[in-house]
Every structure is written in structure tokens, then in C-alpha cells.
Length: 436
Ligand code: GTR
Image: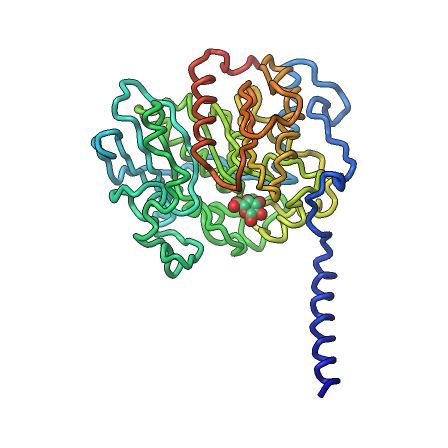
């Protein structure tokens, strides 16, 4: 009897050890002393070794080079603007939220041949505004109806991750989810500051699971799942592409000032906001909230989540080429400071949360710091602090930063800083596009 038990124990131990060996990932590092020595690629030196000395060198040579590297090696290449895209206004009220707002719900059909694959955009605009208003644009995780209890918000019918709290049943959102994410969306607060809020459910663009790229916009625009090149777009690229399509809509809406769109994203959607802002220069200001690995945090530090861990947990987020850098970050031709640099000279705000060690808060600050020379080259103020600032002490230059106390989340504190940052830049004329 005893020997049977021993054998069973041995088998379990062997199975666990075997699995660990197959994964071959070192333990997650949260110790600053164990961050490996690394050398970052220089954003201001071209692949051929020539230095970037002028705005022209940056815009005509180095920026396109870096953009191409991120497309090929990290996120994958997305198609352009679809030719058969259509917008339909589904609902509108000039007296929403007790008279504070105009509400619009617009259905964006990516391709008229696939009328069922559509994204619903929800807009709240301050009713008191007499001119086109600046807006905050951010995708949401749980459906448009989750951002506010307003009963008029349409509930998405797109796939949603199951949840035990009754807000999703059988992969479909339910009425119970109405307002469920409101702590992250201070709608009235933003409207009273004179900004609109624009949102859409990220799963309307591409459902967030690995289905071999059949559903969502990958299924419409290809490439076919069995013929995907290693630089084909992953889900982050798809969501970023969706943000550009929302911008296409905003450019047609005369109540919105499309030259003053602040793009915001949290976590995986923070990675997405940075990538969208890097590619699409129509976004005037970009905010990354706790975006971490593959977002604002430097990959080479291997602190918290690493390239290998993110690729294993979310094989559909990045392009296939990115897997070459699992446990091999030094071979990356870029690091995430260069993603931020692609947004220059437009203002960028990176926000960390000190307890969010998985996202490497200090690594997020360092990426911003190493992006700073590009703002300085282009005549911006850059980052106004060389050292990691104390907790809850925002820095507001052309580059904004804070490390908030608390956890991985979007809070009113975060929003309050973003509103101040947007006020500062949207009210001043010093954020005009640089000469080319
Ligand atoms: C985590 C992931 C992070 C971050 C986060 C989120 O599981 O490891 O990179 O994106 O999800 O988006 O909530």
C-alpha cells in the first residue's frame, strides 16, 4: 500500500517538474538588484550608424525606421483604412445625463460586405459647449454600458469573457453589467471640465482570445489564418487599428474637435493606446495608464511580466516575430522607450501604480526618460525630472508622469492628472506639429 502511495507521489512530482522544465521560465523577478545589465538601442542613432541631428533626420529617416521595426518585430502590420466602411447613427439624445450631455451611439461597420461585424461608438459631449469640443477617447473592457448606469446605452452583443458576477452569461453581456466599470469612468467630472468622452468595446474590434485569427477584424481583412506571415497583425495592432477607425468617424462629426483628441488606455489597452498613437499622428495627446510589458515598460529589465511570459499567456497579442525575443530581449532591435518616442513631439503621459509591480512601474518611468532626448531634439520641454518622482507627485512637461499609490487600476486621481495635462497642452499653442 505504502509503495503505491509513494509511486503516486513520485508521479505527481515528476509531472510538475516536467511541466516546469517545458516552460523553462525563470521565476518572476521583483528585485531591483536582480535586474540584468542591459544596453538600450539609441533612438537618435540610425540603423546605419548615422546620428539624428535635426527634426528632418528624425521624421524622414529614423522615425520611419523605428516604426517599421515595431511593425515587423513586435505588433505586426495592420491594413489601411477600409474602402467599404460605413457609419450609422443608432441613437441620439440632446438631453442625456440630466441635461449635462449630448449622447450619440454610432455603429461603425468595418466593411459593408460584413454588416454584422461592427463596432458601436458611444459619445457623451458637454451640452453647454458652443464649439467643437476636445475629447478623451478610450476603449473599454466590458461594453459601453459598463461605463455608466445610463439606461439608454446599448448593450453589446459581441463575445465577452465569462464572469461569475452575472454581468456576462454564455459569452454575452447582460443588463447587470450596466455601470459595472463606472469607478474607472468619471463621465460627469470630465464633461464638466469641458471635454467629451468617446468609447467603444475592444471586443467589437477583435475578441480577446486566441482563435487563430478567424474572428473580429482579422477575419474580414486577413491574411487567411493558414497563410499568416510572421509580421501579420496581432490583437493589439487590431485594437489600435480600431482606434484609428474611430478617429475616421470623429473627423466627420462636427461637434468634436478632432485636432484635440486625447487617447487613453489602461493595461493591455494602454499598450494599444501607445501603439495607436505611435502610428496615427492624428491623435494629439496619448496617455498610458499602467500599460507595463509591451506598453511603456522597458522589456530589457525583465522586471515583473517579461516578453516570454506575455507571449505565452497571450499568444494572440503580438505578431509571431515577437516570440523570437522570449528570454532574448537583448536581440530586440527596439525597446519600449522607442515606442513612446514615435509619438514625439505630441504630449505623452505615462502613469504607473506603485503596487502594480507586474507592470514594472520604475521601468515605465525609465522608458519615458530614455524617450526624452527625442522631445528635446524637436524643441519640446521633455521630462521635467531626471529621477523617479515621489509617490503621487505628477510631473507635467511635454512628457507627463506620475506613480500613484495603490494598485493596477484607473482612478479619479489618474483622471484628474490627465485633465490637467490636456488643459495645459490643448489650451496652449506650443503643441503644433513640427516642421518636416
Ligand atoms: C495581464 C497582463 C498584462 C496586462 C493586464 C491587463 O494579465 O499580463 O500585460 O495587460 O493583463 O490588460 O489587464
